[in-house]
Length: 353
Image: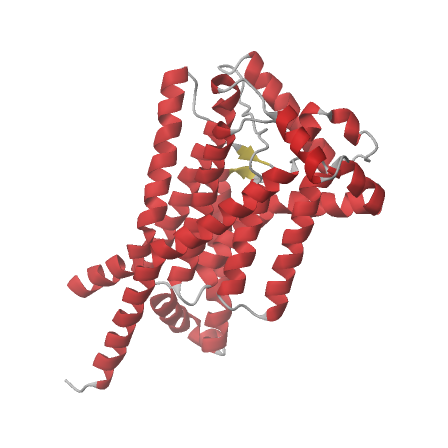
């Protein structure tokens, strides 16, 4: 029993920073709700509430991890049960499952805290820095509007639908990549690194919203995007504007949350985080290139549809890079400790008793 507890502690040692970020962000959301007299909301998505969606996706990935290994090991229906027991015992001992569930819970608490704090923003900081950020766009684009330039260069037909698909796919990318990192990583600390970095993205992004409150070009300068066709992004933007109006009109009765905030771009920061970790972890070249292409297209889409100003994406790069570095610092010692433990176990297995 002591050895089992030691393995659980060793495997979970890299969770410290993620749990701390979750407790801090969640705690601030609770405090904000109490001070403002507002309810906490569990934000819904088009796939269902996050408290249900995240465990469901994680469960599917665990099943997808276990079933093929069991079938390969069994080599026939008669050996399925012992093969399944062997795979679960070696791939999913209870201490690893606990670590993964705590990591998922840390992400969930941080995300819900982030969404609620973001929704509180109009009631706490009503002023807007959109005019200053628009001026920065004019300066950085040499007197032009970046969105207009992209519309002229890329067109407003097929490009709009392709970039809309890229932007909307982010909603699926985050939970799927999180589950994949926690379930399919050979070293559990790689999954903890990514989870911690995601938590840091949400929390640092929340801080940036309160530092420089802004709504983004599509919300404040809508006429600049009238030439774009109806896409998934335009529908999402209309829904977000309605939700913010509902929150401002009656924050107590509505079930909506306000999700509009421009500085910094968390689409940029999170996809940059994923691409950077994939690159640093030495994934196959096709995976690395796919992630970098996805990152570039995501950045372009944020400007193309008016979600963000140029400096928002720059700030997103800073947040993403900082999250990767801090996440690595938070899990590095755990990785070293786990490697030493694994090496010790391997050595002990070679020594006769």
